[in-house]
Length: 244
Image (cartoon, rainbow, N blue to C red; front, side, top):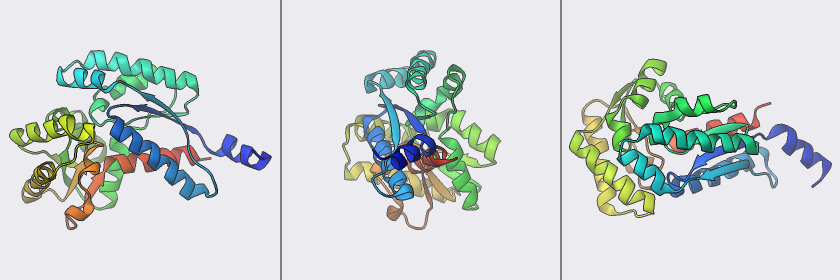
């Protein structure tokens, strides 16, 4: 490595620590997007400086489906501390769902934690929207921890699908999307949920599970703005990594 390249890498690009594995599909997408975006910004042969702690997804599934949030918090706090000790300058978590314990992660480390809601909410406000639908796992849609942050910190009203639809969408995420299974019926179920939310007054839709953008995209409903939490999270993390 030349002296110039060493100076650029050492002084300009901070190390992003990723709490990954929930799921491996989303984690791989984060890794690819971070590297691609940093290369687009810096050019040449540059990619990101990234540390990934990829958990066994069975642990995440067990915590979430059995409502074991204290256990999840202890588990993730330990992984966050390992990333910090390894040299991460910033932490991100690839799962909207696991942000249920974000406060415990923040308290466990001394480096910044970039919450997935914040860049998404900023994009929604920049688009001039105030009422949006939220899709994700059952906890994301049924519990208040993300909805409250959107509402209290950014003034955004959140609508969610009906309970039966929540059950269907949650099952698709865990049993299909997290296993890289993408089917026409699954896509139809998500588009039906989007249409129903739009009919109830949602001006846009938050893809509030980082696997959902692997199934549907803006072109599926061109007139309804979609907010890809994964892509927006990556953009914010790269912005931090490249900031002076």
